[in-house]
Length: 79
Length: 282
Image (tube, rainbow over all chains, first blue to last red; front, top):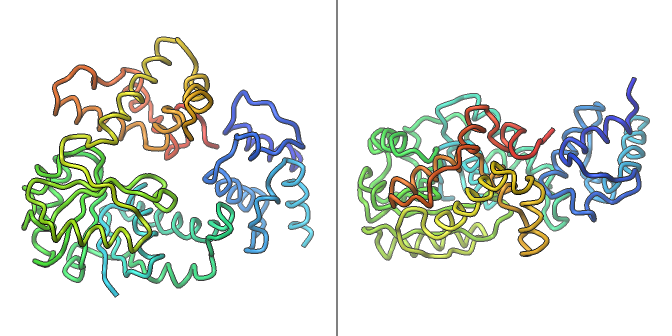
């Protein structure tokens, strides 16, 4: 089964074909992502991992890097 | 509380409905397709819920209250209750003419009508409506909730009172109005569609790839978005329709649509809304 990281990377990669970025790169600082993308990412995470993202979670810092997104999803799944 | 009739719940109409509802107006949202209304409801709900992620100053404390300001189950008859109508159906003269024939039966004599179009002549469109002095063009930009200005178009018969009131209405939802005269494409599309079309030709002729074209505009000219990203955001079908209007209106070959754009429409690659255009989205 694909790991959370693989699924998140595959989602982001679909938007930004041909771009190379590491698990620690800030996708917003690199200019890959815009405001609409951030909303699509949140909706993807909710449906893909069956989690509910609440108001307190709506901080862009939770979604800046692949590693942070993975940690966030893992915490929500445990919580 | 004033009531706004928003006709068309597609990409633009749903954004327009959202901003008016957020500003406390009662919104009557009408579309001929029930499926489109359901998509619009879910889109607006998610936009309201998730907008703090875009800007921390944007709140999502009252999502349910704002959603209650929008009535998604309306017919044209409800236009009788509207103080303003914002019409957002596709850029197609025949469709608009048919719609106007229908709504002419319902809206009040004092209702002001804003036609949200990016290229069709406001003077011509208003000739299909009752009381032409109450009609003007309002070209909202996508995404409606984030762009702080609108292109306001004065038709031949638009009264000064209508201009003043529509400007005040735009100001009440936080939009600055930039007033221009009526000629097909106005200022925005008359210029932007030339460079979008030429960008498509450049890709078709393999002078450069999609990314390279957009990078030139972003990294060399400092634009926020490149022309092909913009085309995806607008919708490739809408771009093709707009070029058709511009070409028909001016009879100038500079507006002849790039075959690649037409091919993308035939292939269903319409941009963000179909998740595939010059770029992929999911």
